[in-house]
Image 1 (cartoon, one colour):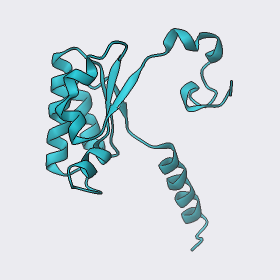
Image 2 (image 1 turned 90 degrees about the vertical axis):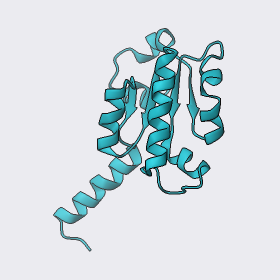
Image 3 (image 1 turned 90 degrees about the horizontal axis):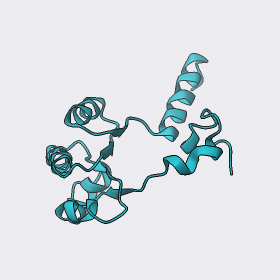
Length: 135
């Protein structure tokens, strides 16, 4: 019953606890080459409301560790979005690549994570340190 969670935008959603059950959905993550091979079957499991694509883990499973922006990973993600769209499955993705984020939205992702909270905290700390000229 925490009032400050990611799910309620860190306390910004009024009456979140009262209405949360009305908005719950089940999203599964597809983050490996094997998952991508079985994407339609995974998305079709009863109760699954959408699929969230993870390019960083996908890259690692493809032997491209640390390369979520590799052309083969991008192509696999774009293909997955199209395949999920074809079966009318809501799709999302997390990518810190702004250009690719916009491309995914154009392709039809409905939930597109464009940042990571911890990265934003680190970026804010770096900016603050720079403004105060700390080394």
